[in-house]
Image (cartoon, rainbow, N blue to C red):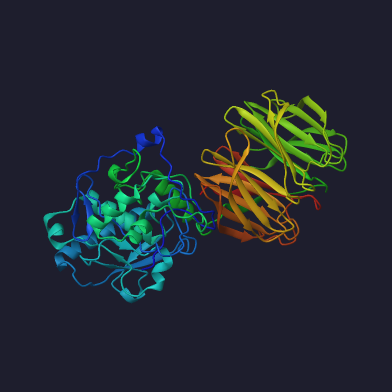
Length: 577
């Protein structure tokens, strides 16, 4: 039977199914002795934890995932939807009094999801109009269709398989709550958290297959379908593994090949709450870009724009490569552009501007593609440009520069779009460029590069505007470029890429200067690009944005957008999902 999954993921990802032994730190959070297990009916009861084993129904189909939760891209209900829920009669169902007991528990605990998701459950007696139809077949176990996949089926879309005698004798509240929250998580589009590609669970497949055949009567195919990590090739988006998720099975150490156990849980974890809120945020739209707050009409030609935060104050740095004009303005607490604090005319030709951090000190990096001139300045504590700490002449042609820190070490990634040559340098604590650690002759044409982070892992994003090719690589702890995690061909012509995190969820924003098109996509914990969340032009089809810079003041988020040809600039609110 078809179903869909419970991890927050949402697009196409490169396949991963590595069996990784957890770290000792992780194991301290995942501990449970789970040897007292017996079969009850057609399901599994762990006597210490009283868990009903949910059987996922979608393992025959390409799974797609999003955050400490796992989700498919095409199974999400409309944000703000009211889902009608009905109870339907089933064969082998308990007596009416026992069914009414279960119905009351379902109505009570399903509502827990409403506190954290912009979704409502409306219980009705009209099963023909219901989105979710619940049966109580005692021989069918505990399961649910995933999200909107329920629309593809007639009859029940969820089942609770408690035996009548169990109900009559009394089932604990934690057992009811755990099972109901879990199945309604599936109904909202979530898949099993233990199938999160970031989990790295070290299954002992021989023991696991024998165990679930003995206790649940599952075939090898069904066991693997319910346990194996979902391939990032098809998922939309995932964050780090959450062992406390309501969507995870209790996992016995006896069926893993390393010291790995997970205790079952009867509460929504903090990541469950955040993750479902990212998928169903408490507003009509799902995207982060909010309404425009401020608009400015300046002179044209500002082709280098950066935001630097010094202390608790943000500053807007702008430079015209053709004229050498440089302005720095404070950014006010309400997100607007404040007073100008720096106004200089430098030499022309500065084509690449980057701001980077070493320790608590911010630095300004300037590069001339045509001549290879490189300057690095300190920023003063008042936001103005301070003394020059580095002045060199490199070879010409360098068009891409990205700074990043790995632990206490700093690095600079350089690339020539025209030739494909790339270099990686160490960056000293005083802001100067240190020794070269790698030189590579790659393919030409890569027009965009960005370093971004998911959880504790940094990644390098590359995009070739002329062909639409997009790649993502891990960045190793030694600063070098590691394995490729993403390789897709998109539409051509994207000129700006920025990454923005919100509530443990990373997003990529893509913009086309030519027509003003903007896209927002989920980014998974493994560094792959997931489902599209937003595809629009902010109601300004006449404006293409040449720069986009996100910044935060206190608890408020904003984005600064600039059109270098027209001199038009706007600041928009950015939602916190």
